[in-house]
Length: 182
Image (cartoon, rainbow, N blue to C red; front, side, top):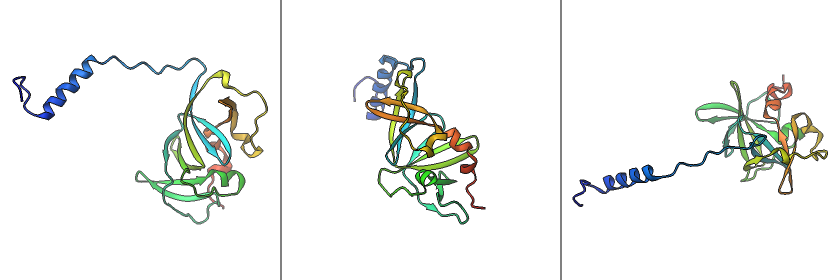
């Protein structure tokens, strides 16, 4: 190469990377203003919902499941996720008794509360959004009554009304926790 003491292309790249890191400006802190928060936005049928970040640990393409006898019809089955057996629930079927139609946009929200983990099938995950206090929707929410116990409020952004969905309320609901028919 040259007389810089570098003997291989790998060493040259490593040296360049070190110089870049030393000269780089620090990234700005992602500070949120008071009263703002981030949430995972998703769609359940036509309803736009958001769950605060924290309980949703992962978003998955629907895995292959094995049906478990003696469970509610809304329990799709059990899936092997990262070597662990994960119950998977069709959220639309839980609320309205109708399975979500198969769609490439369907996703599983891997929700954790303490040692309890569950996969929730939703129509689509729309991404992460930042919400502010001024996004609160004060009009009556347009959501069906079945979602009422699980909604903390409504927000509006860019002409879309988002129902703030409480994963905690769902995971603590006696009707949801008991997956068996018996």
